[in-house]
Length: 148
Image 1: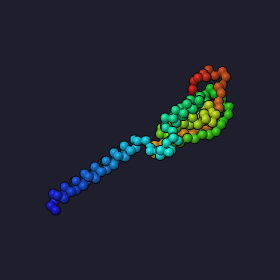
Image 2: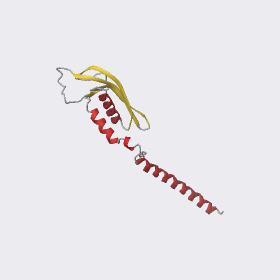
Image 3: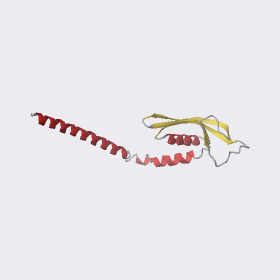
Image 4: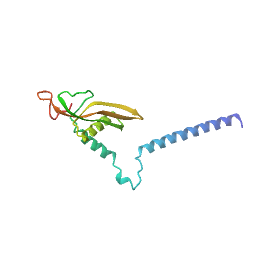
């Protein structure tokens, strides 16, 4: 083979590999955008993400106050229910909202010692203590509809 044709083979081979690599990345990106395929017999048991988000939002609205400290300004801790932990959320805000929802389902109306952290691969976890609180009498900043 002459020198010129060897370079053509190398260039065309490199271009073919680059095209193959780019097409595989595009196919993978397109595949990730599609929803997961659920077996037809199991689809009736598969709730949508919107159902979970709506339920989580409704439950988390029952929480009147949250704090990363051990106390809440204007509230007195009446009873500690349980330490709660959630993980697998895409954003820290979603993790805290999920934490509030779990605490509300356990009968709490506040969460103290709230912490959230990244657990790897773009997922977040949150933890805290679910507690029942009541407003402190005579505190000017208290408003029944306000959240802290």
